[in-house]
Each structure stands twice: as C-alpha cells, then as structure tokens.
Amino acid sequence: MISQRSIISTITAKRTWNALGGIHPRLSRSTLSLVVSNGRRPTPLERRQFHTRPSVQAPAGVSPTSVAEKLSLAGKVTVITGGARGIGLTLAETVAGLGSDVVILDVLQPERELSELEKTYGKRIRYYRMDVTSKPGMDAAFASAINDFGRIDNCITSAGIALDKPFFEHTWEESRRLLDINVLGSFFSAQLAAQQMVKQGNGGSVVLIASIAAHCAIPAQCVSLYGASKAAIKLLGKTLAVELAPHNIRVNTLSPGFTATSMSRQFTEIQHVFQTTPPLKRIGTPEDLALAVAYFLSDGASYTTGAELAVTGGLHNGRIEV
Image 1 (cartoon, rainbow, N blue to C red):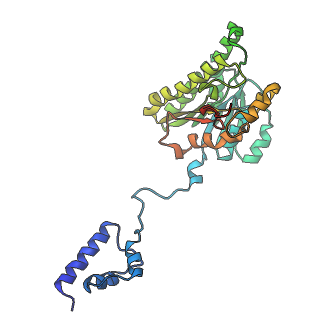
Image 2 (cartoon, helix red, strand yellow):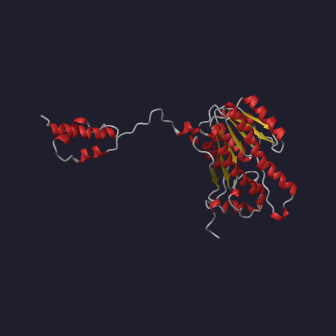
Image 3 (tube, rainbow, N blue to C red):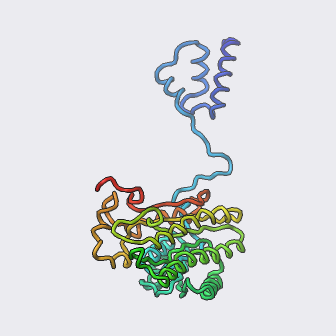
C-alpha cells in the first residue's frame, strides 16, 4: 500500500515534470513513483534519466523548415541593375539557382548567353537595355519588365562605375556622371521596384550594392568621390529600410571589398595590393557575395532590414601589419 504522503510526493514530482514539458520518455511514471515513494536515493542511471532535458515541442503554428527552404526564391522575380557582367551577373545566376526568374537591366549586353543560363537553371532570364542616367529610359525598362513578368519581388542595384584619380584632378563632368550612375541610378531603381511591390501588396526585398570605399580610404587608390557615392548608398539603405517598413519592404546594403572582376583586372599595376592587403590575404570573388545577397533576399531574412554587410576579407576593419 502506498501512503498518502507518497501519493502527494508523486503528484508533486509529476507536476514538476509536467511544468518542464512532461515526463522524459526514458523515465516512466512508475519508476518515478517508486523512487519518490520509497524515499531512497535514485541510482546513477535514474539520476541521469531524471535530469535529462525533456524534449521541447515547437510552438503552435511554427513548422520545422530547412535552411534550404528558407533560402528558396521559387516563384519570385528579381530585378538586377548592372547585371550584364561582373558581380551583377554572378548575382543573377545566384538568384536563378535559388528558383527566381531574373530581369537584367544594363546599358551593356550580357557577357553570357542568356539562353544557355535559362537551360542551366530552368528559369526565365531576360535582358532589357537600361541607362540609369535617363529617368524616362528607366521608366520604360521597368514597365517592359513588369509587363512581361507580371511582378517584382526583389531588386538588386549593382549598376555603378568607379573613378580612381587624385582629388585635385577630378573634373565636374566625370564627377557628375559618377554621382548620376551610382547614387541617382540606385535611388530611382529602388523607387521603381518598390512602387511595384507596394502595388502587389505583399512586400519585397531590396539590396543596394555599396563598397568598402564607403567605410574607409582604400590602399593604393584615390577614390574620394566614388567612396562618397557609396557612403550615400549605405545610408540610403538605412533610411529606406525605415520608410518602407510599413509596406513590408526590406532594404539592406552590401559592401564588397577588392573583388576579381573585369573592372578590377584593369588595374594591372596594383594587383599585388588586391591580393595581399586584406587580412585574409586574397582578393575576393563575386561568388563570395552570393550567399550574403541570397540571405538578404530570402524569407530567412524576414526580420532583417537596414543592415549593412561588408564582405572585404576584413580590410574595412583596418590592418595590423605596416
């Protein structure tokens, strides 16, 4: 016969376990009752079982979703300005590989044959000529893309140019062109994409491509105005993130460091700087940026907006060597 005291002790113990999520399956209720009612010390095995953390169930309404599923862009349409070559083209392939249809907007023809890319990824990839220094031209290119694809879910602003020359040698004309392309081009591309996202009513994601030059001076290069233009993009990402949040449109920025592209290969005399200056002791590749952008665009980043990610091999933090 089990005494009243033993029953109360057993009920108390059960309530304790229930509060923690239930009796661990390795420790039966009968075993727990015997341990408590007999007043003896539990064996080492029983002690290990008793203190094993009980399994925790996911809250109601939350289903286990794999990382791959969260990164999927299936059924979405991604617009990429400056997507005909270099970083922009790599990002076009990245989003196509994740299941997105792709709209490439560029003043240049794509370096790759798009029909071959469509076969590789099984997604629609279309090119529309667009000059980001012409607002009417931008309006027409976006309108054509929306007419053909029906929607815009993501936008990456990768169109940009660099200007490497001493501060005192900058001219008005080339400086104005740089600002028109890098700042106004990105600003109005984001605006046109966001306007369509608002019409659709289910949010979206914008990734603005900034630069390490937005963080610090660059070794062996004089890029004062270029850096200023990319710093503008970095701050633009933060302000747009706040302004567009009520529409569930997320805006984040990405700052590449030295990256091996056709543009960077033109600087033949400082290739050794690209390879040795970053703390990680190598130049970056466009593929180094792929997963960062994939995260920003995906549902896995649904609570991430106004963030800035520098992918520079650590160079934006400085150097210890002299």
